[in-house]
Length: 125
Image 1 (tube, rainbow, N blue to C red):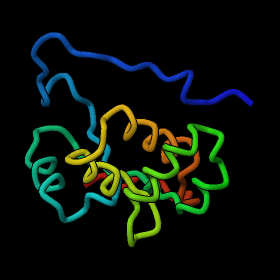
Image 2: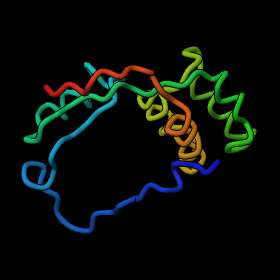
Image 3: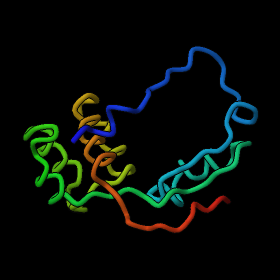
Image 4: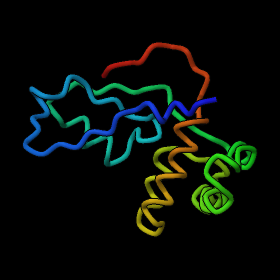
């Protein structure tokens, strides 16, 4: 099986970005509801929406240990902590203490295997 993440394009901006004319919509993970990130996003001039959310139990990370390796599984367990699962907010909070390249691999687990199963449409606010 090929990894869907191998087909995504990463873009870097080298100049100004206008949130009102260059951004069609900002879509956040629901783990950021009622946070400072939510407040900042809501103050921007572009529409704000929420997707269904991505979470991944640490047991699913362990089940796919060969995906990014045992050391990344260990880091994912440390990042998940008492929550026992990963979300974008939980992974983001680890940026203050985890190596960014290793944390990116934890993010790969969440992006590759994390889901909610909810099929309702996105809701704009």
